[in-house]
Amino acid sequence: MGNLSYAIVGTGALGGFYGAKLQKAGNEVHFLVNSDYQQVIKHGLTIESKDGDFRLPQVQVYNQVEKMPSCDVVVVSIKTTQNHILTQILPPLVKDDSIVLVLQNGLGIETEIAQIVSNVNIIGGLCFLCSNKIAPGHIHHLDYGKITLGEYATNYNAVGITERMKAIFQDFENAGIEIELTEDLLLGRWKKLMWNIPYNGLSVILDATTDEIMADMYTRTLVEQLMKEVQLGAKSTGRIIPDSFIQTMLDYTVKMKPYRTSMKIDFDENRPLEVEAIVGNPLRIAAEHDVSLPLIRCLYQQLKFLDNRNIGDR
Ligand SMILES: NC(=O)C1=CN([C@@H]2O[C@H](COP(=O)(O)OP(=O)(O)OC[C@H]3O[C@@H](n4cnc5c(N)ncnc54)[C@H](OP(=O)(O)O)[C@@H]3O)[C@@H](O)[C@H]2O)C=CC1
Ligand SMILES: CC(C)(CO)C(=O)C(=O)O
Image 1 (cartoon, helix red, strand yellow):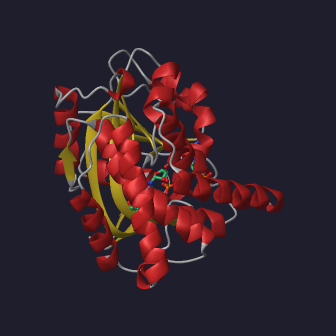
Image 2 (cartoon, rainbow, N blue to C red):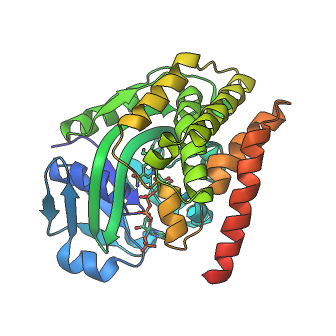
């Protein structure tokens, strides 16, 4: 039996996958859903995974946060484009000393959450996961899944490895989820952005998969230049990412199965893009430290155009 109780805020590709694995391992898990309520209450969750398919015929599912119990860990796994709902969702779900675990992509979300709920501890998780929700309550896990956890403190000061992080580590590891701990959440977030900024952005602008981007000399060079700007952004906040990490990310992507990034999937499905969390916030945070990132700004401006044009089609 796991130690902590979990509330999954957003039972989609990521939250549905990790939440189901935690429940399967014996943890108490409560799932908040949106449009999937009828399906999940009748049939539970179905996980198709490269690590083995499984079904949870019965899960504790809710479509109203007021009906959920407060939990030890509240996992934030909606898209960042929906984060405006967190002002309503988080206060009833947390108790003193709850942990809010932010598994979303992007930068600066923990600071926003600290302004909504002040009586909690906030931990960020960087997820190297390739997963899609392919039907209501039906998740397809394609590849990877490792999470890197780091605890948040004001101004992203590094706070080392805490007992809270260790407790979550234990539950996730017991559930068969690959997990590691980092002493510096901000460094971890910038490292994740080194992948997300170039590939998520270019996949939408160029209408391309990761393998197509890497196969072409011009776009491969552009990826590298964008990564160098992410490195500068990290440096503006006092975090050093070595050049060798850029090469590691390029090699990692070449080895990846051809992948349609999450931003590209959102674009193709006519959903709002996580541009602000993934591209806008890093730009703004670097600018606060007097560093401009012109290539990333150019990417941002194009993504905003495409996202706004899509809104008309929604
Ligand atoms: N998928 C992946 O492999 C990875 C995702 N991430 C990050 O994880 C985050 C989540 O992404 P992902 O799981 O892919 O997104 P999904 O769209 O698959 O999941 C989000 C879920 O949140 C639900 N939701 C939306 N609004 C509400 C609401 N008001 N109340 C309850 N539930 C709601 C959606 O339900 P409905 O569809 O009914 O609206 C959906 O099931 C993003 O920040 C993403 O960048 C990071 C790494 C990998
Ligand atoms: C790096 C990757 C592919 C998986 O973690 C991702 O974050 C995304 O598609 O947004």
